[in-house]
Amino acid sequence: MKNQNGITLIALIITIIVMLILVAVTVTTAVQSGLFGHAGNATKEWKEAEDKELNIDSEIKTNVNGSEVTGINNVVDAYTNSNSTTTPQE
Image (tube, rainbow, N blue to C red; front, side, top):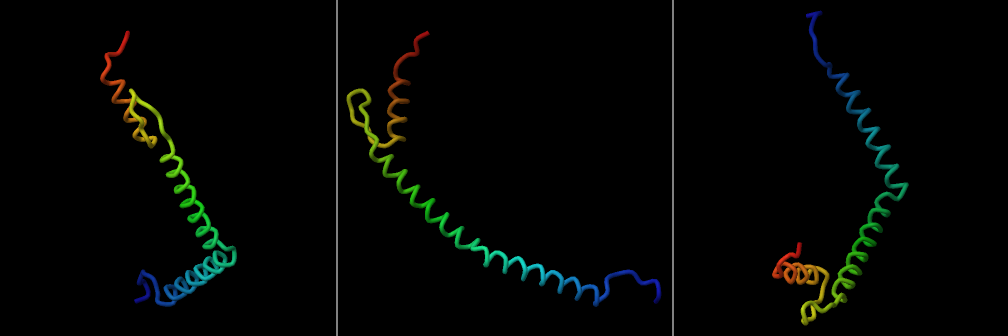
């Protein structure tokens, strides 16, 4: 019985206690530093920037082959389609 290998119950309990202490310190540091608040603010700012980008996109207007096109994706598609119908010049 003296040559048994393996982890003891005491070693397992000590490991769990050390891990719980590390988790407690990490969570306390994250809460006190305002990490979650900064993440929430960043998310709100990102959504506002995305909305502003969509508004700018809807304001883009141009004429392609005599027809008015609105929105950057539509403008790109219209130019691509109008250039693909003509034969390339070499």
